[in-house]
Image (tube, rainbow, N blue to C red; front, side, top):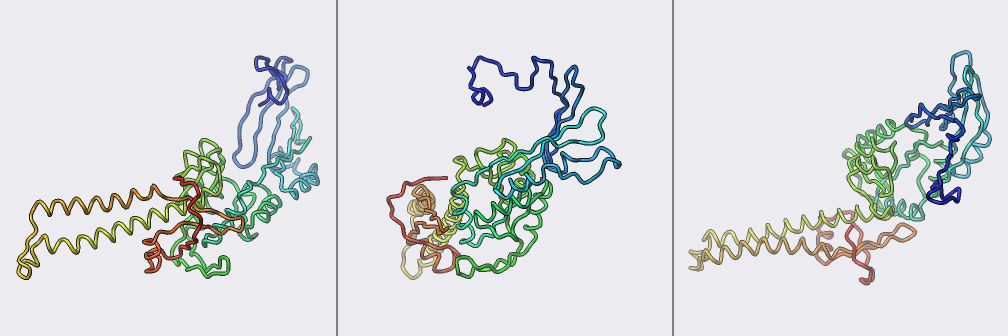
Length: 355
């Protein structure tokens, strides 16, 4: 990436840190949730400690006597944050000095995915309480939350990795209140909440592992992919809604298979046991009984294989999710086995896809 930015040939070597001029960089380490630090030295320069990261990290006092209010760069950072950018500081500590000096600020643009707003709206429409938890400053977090439709009371900003995991724990212990989604009353769940965490960064790995369901973006860091239960290979946020929809379809199919197997056995077992022999003078031959046993398994397996015809739901910009419901699923929804699920007819011409 650096060679591409400097527009040089692949075989050419870029001396980004001035190593050919005697510049030496060492002592590099990462402080999770705060920033990075390294030492830079060169004959004639002396040694300097460079920090890049949050305000507290880059302006951290060396001693109690050096602790004072330093507002360098704060005005520029506030302006960047109001634009929804991630603002970080760059500070230098000279050898023997007692105070770090901020020499620059950076505004990093982490653009919101185009499908983020419709994904949040779709989850809220289904009665999911959506939260935004980030290590960025609250001004930046609020700007992003407003752009994607998350209520300001559901925003946690400036949190460290462990605090993200603590938020997951608090949400798991909390009882879900009655919610309204798209003007319709959602059935309240008075039990402990189930929490799904969608993330892609190193700082999110603890929360991903602690959540009931950890969902990682495919383009995220390796540690996040390892900690997650589900990986969105296409890095499309709509697949979060699709994964929830697919899990609901699979669960309903399990209930359907159980219902069919129970009905089949309730009817067939009395015949196989000879319960009706005194009335009908008919008994089930062993060969026919074995065939009927096989038919029971075939019916359940066939029902499960029909999941290959699963059709990906269509998500509109306003968050309305359109899905395909079979006649059996409508019957199950009518009798309460698929409570809370909304079906809308769409054209069957959409491409089938298994996530």
